[in-house]
Every structure is written in C-alpha cells, then in structure tokens.
Image (cartoon, rainbow, N blue to C red; front, top):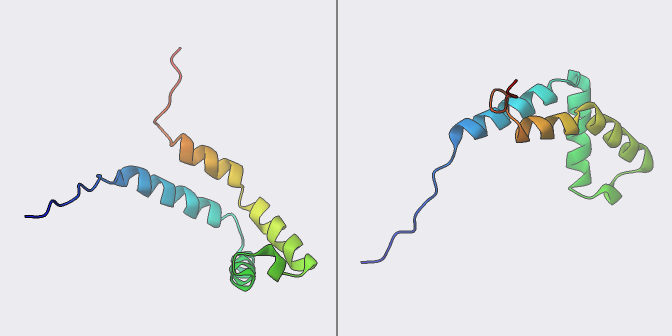
Length: 86
C-alpha cells in the first residue's frame, strides 16, 4: 500500500488576514486607478520592458499608492498578535 504524503495544515486565519490586508490596500486606489493598474500589469506580462517609459512611470506611481511597505508590515505583524508589555 503506497504511503500518502502528509499535507501541512494551512493556517487559514493567517491567510484570511493577508487577504483582508491586501484588499484594504487595493481599495486605497480609485476605481479608475485600479483599472489602469490591471491594464498595465496585463500589458506588461510580468516584464517592465514591455511597457513604454510613460507606462512604467504610471505603474510605479500606482504601486506606491498601494503602500507596499504598510502591506508588508501588516503581513508580518497582523493586528492583535504583537502587543508591548508595559
């Protein structure tokens, strides 16, 4: 009888917190900006070289508006998990 590999349990609460944080940051953009970002990412196909210099600048601007540093902090230190003791 073949052995079935063990599947690690997925920490669903952590996954849910990450999804909610990503959603909060996605909604920092206006609907038109979200559509433009989707268009640029699709057009680039993962390569900045597929975009014109103006499109690259637009992409940089929109990504900065998403506040990736704040998203990274939220991902590393989810709310309520780390509290300082006084």
